[in-house]
Amino acid sequence: MDKRLTLWILVGMILGVAVGYAVHVSFAQDSTQFEYLTKTFKLLSDIFLNLIKLLVAPLILSTIVVGIAHMGDSSALGRIGFRAISWFIVASFISIGLGLLMVNLLQPGIGAPVDNITNAAATIGEVKKLDFWDFILSIFPKNAFEAMATNNILQILVFALFAGIALSAVGEKGAPLVRGAEALAEMMLQITHYVMRYAPVAVFGALAAVVSKSGLAILLTYLELVGEFYLSLALLWTILLSIGAIFLGRRIWTLIRYIREPMLIAFSTASSEAALPKLFEQLDRFGVPRRISGFMLPLGYSFNLDGSMMYMSFATIFIAQAYGIDLSIGTQILILLTLMISSKGVAAVPRASLVVITGTLAMFDLPVEGVALILAIDQFLDMGRTATNVVGNAVATSVITKWEGMLEVEEPEFVEPLHAPAHTAAHGKAGLDLASDMVTDERKTKL
Image (cartoon, rainbow, N blue to C red; front, side, top):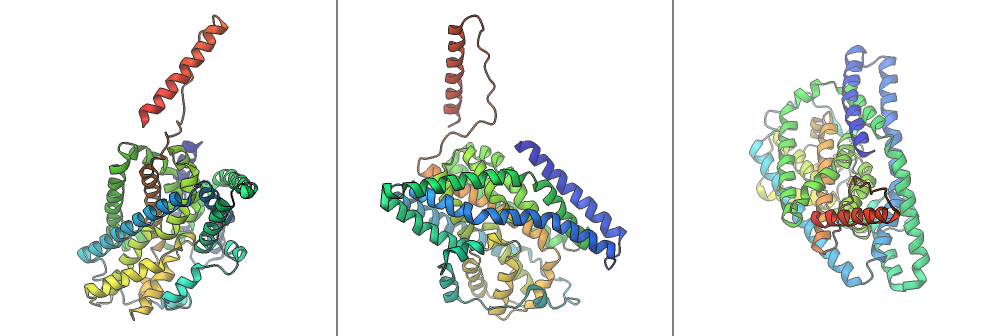
């Protein structure tokens, strides 16, 4: 099923680009037919994203609660949490530092066409200056149901942390609620399995919509920016996977193979949220216990957005370069630290990075209208940064699990059955025992 779904997602991507380009060249953009087709394309992807958003709150809540409740002792939770946050901080500084280095080295904004820029503030919406105190306050929910209704990942995370720790503390009295959370998590993952069958259609609609409006020329117009940004992402992938290989050894290649499908989903839909359920499933197969992934992934999706942080640093300095504004290294570092804090939780909302960038530009008195420079190709940039977020969180979760000594043998994709001799029942039993021993030995060798 996995290989077929991956193939169909790739087919959906290719057809989406082809059909979108055909619509772009065949219909005038102010025609009724063009509007009808683009709305239809957008509808196909919006249905998928709405279904995914339906899953996110109960899935994150149940997996975190179960994960923390099964930790048993608070010392294990504190140790894993400390290691996770330490990893996230290091990864964040690597992403920010590499983005700062590459954008200053390559200078993609020099000579950018700023003459015909329209007012981007109207497109993004009202610009609100970022306030550190308001941001900290917004992490803590006033109403748990409101947090789940709005898919506020940070607030859901805080509530789930309290609930999981409390259930762990009350012990046997909380066992029914823990079992209920386990059942809820299994139910949501089963629903996810159904929803994912629609992913190729959603991918087709998402790409057909953006290409029909922008055409293929948009890639040529911004070739330098796109190419240099993806080069920077490739370097970031190399660094993250190399660090992962230090801990995981040869199993890093198995991890890459298992996460290719959630990476494709994230790349195609430009939504980390869309890839989250499938990432849970693939990490299960890799050997990460659900009590670890249920804690690490939601935490990572709030605090470990490597691709988004690189993108926001790249885009902000790019806009300053395009307008000929010379920023000192100190100012750039201050901007990037602001982005690091304000980026938490944006993985839940596709293209929310534009809002964060706009607010940061306003805070530092940089031209907000410069966001229009990246609006046209934000979809393509969003694909790369979202896939990078998935890679970063998959590596972080696997490394912390290995660090804790809890990484299990990966689930085999297929075990060839050994045909026992049919002479006697005893021979049949011996054959089954031999097959079991061989499978066990094979699993041990994979460690």
